[in-house]
Length: 324
Figure 1 (cartoon, rainbow, N blue to C red):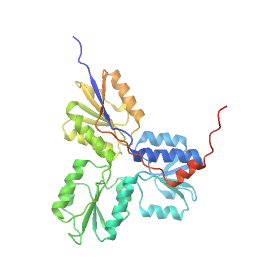
Figure 2: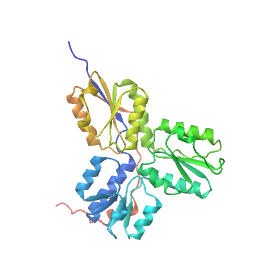
Figure 3: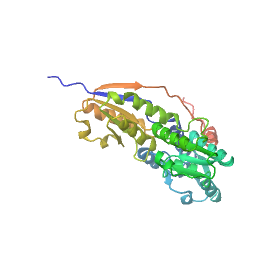
Figure 4: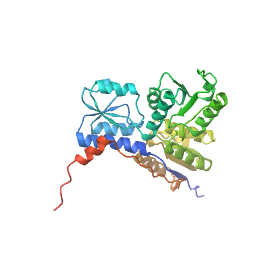
């Protein structure tokens, strides 16, 4: 009797978003243009493979700008930094290259604006995430962080009619919606950002999982365990009743996950490189998942420009020698 053909649904969009591509390019170009060492504050993006690859090229990752020798170049990660970090860099005369994702910068600008206008600011997100730590630093005395709808009930503010909210860019859409609705019930006059803070790539990858979760017996998400948007993809699938696991690479796949599963959906968080996805596809092909279908839920063509320091470095680079 012929065994049932096994299917692998490869979701698109997946993997690197524009902010991640920009951040990694900044480190690579800086290393080429200026030579190592190039210091990077925190992980440039939350992916172990990417960090190890850049380390091998000469990048030095540090937790604090105080670890960077005075006068050296330092790159801020895609997650952004607080004004306190910028001030510390100035004191050490560091040559800063800012790789903060423009969508995170948007949230920082909104935080400053609301605080200057006298609003109590509610920041929706995960307290220990680098992005939230950086945004909180813009207006620490006016800002409170909430991570669940239950926490909203415990909030107290000086003036319930002067409250605003912002969100981490990598949250689950459903999670953020529930918290925002709780805030609106508690503070009927609350203000929010002109456009949602959750980034386009986070949204697109979650929408793609929602589209196909019902077709699959298992959803696999390639990404590191400290990647917020990757963890959210796992949650989205599980909330729809489809088992899902976050995997660093194909070696993390456990045989028991595949038992009895005829259709697997595969995606990747916004900081996971495509080469890791290709390795998973190859591994699953050898497990019998030979019917490969790529499903593009929506096109994704966003690009972000590079910071001026990098543009100038590219312009100053010598032209390649002409071929005979």
